[in-house]
Length: 81
Image 1 (cartoon, rainbow, N blue to C red):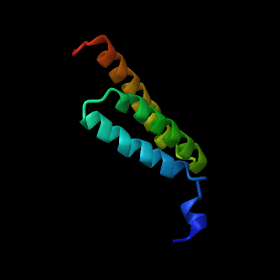
Image 2: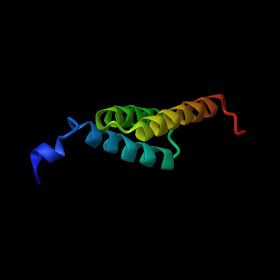
Image 3: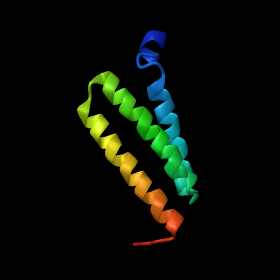
């Protein structure tokens, strides 16, 4: 595997992928920390989107970030609706 290709985006894409996998695992185990972990992943994906000039990636992950903030808030308040 070519190191230059692997680190094309300074490894941020790899970090983002790691955060995303861990977040899905945590949420699957009903851990509220999954929301915060996913927000870290979303932030990394936004950076990758900027580096790749992908407006769709930036917008999608900004929306996902907001949805995770909402999920965190609802979980914290104990609201189910």
